[in-house]
Image 1 (tube, rainbow, N blue to C red):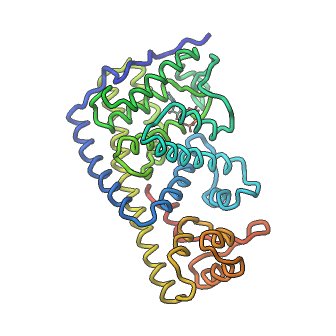
Image 2: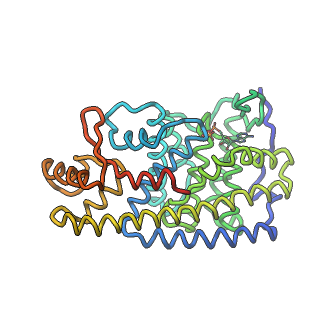
Image 3: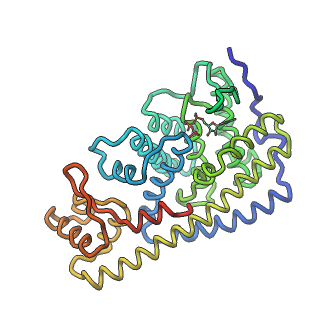
Length: 366
Ligand SMILES: Nc1ncnc2c1ncn2[C@@H]1O[C@H](COP(=O)(O)OP(=O)(O)OP(=O)(O)O)[C@@H](O)[C@H]1O
């Protein structure tokens, strides 16, 4: 049997310290995060933001696993669940479903982030009824060289015990008085080290990051995603994760890991703020112009529909505005003719793309 290459520490790990450098990084990150929390709360249609960002995050997070899909394919898979999408687009769409499920469940449970939720998200992501892994044999290998880089705990009983301790560390505030962002970085490290599932541990670990932010009240809604930060610095991410293990939890290795994650929060919060601002400005412009140029069809619901679904379609408008099919068709065709939407054909259906919104997401920094 494989031998685990790292002793999973008790929580909080003894090497973790809030050093002056960590405290400085924390101050910055909290400032940007508080601004993001306030801005997200002030926009009138939070659901729109949450849905669109979840889809964007699903794409960024899945790229780490090399599940490559185009933005187009992804939005189409979302707009046309009945049509056969590529396997990649399907897997990405399942990530977004798992993430949304986690957030809904967390709200239902009054903010908890439990192992049952984590297992349910894994099952949605991987379309399986497996739970925490029970059989030995899991090891992480270097993609290029095939060399074994990390062996997590092997026995099912060890995996379950470590995950139970992690669940307590997440949910029982009295287990430590560390800053919540420091806790988030520890939780991510510990989760990846336990590696409780046969696959998808990276993606679930990244979902847990955002659910930890909503759990701890640093955000009210899940709008800050670290996947782009991590994708852009994947080598550093693996190296720093591994350095903590190789040094058996040395204080310097932990400090470097904490700084990486806390800076990621600060930078991503800034990028997401810019994206939200871009959406707000675009929505205000569309509102003002559609109202002035097409007063007969303008409604707030129609505007919301164009921003909730980057690719919208006739039946969405029918459903969300409570209008007949011919009326919904007329509205969308008028908006397409006026250049607000781009009408495209997919199989036997038409869809209407909000190009400027999609461009914000594709080019956006968040
Ligand atoms: N030394 C290491 N090298 C590479 N990855 C590591 C290492 N240690 C832990 N990991 C974690 O393992 C994750 C990959 O695990 P797994 O393949 O189960 O997840 P995934 O979601 O399918 O993949 P990915 O994270 O690449 O999207 C990485 O994201 C990383 O967090």
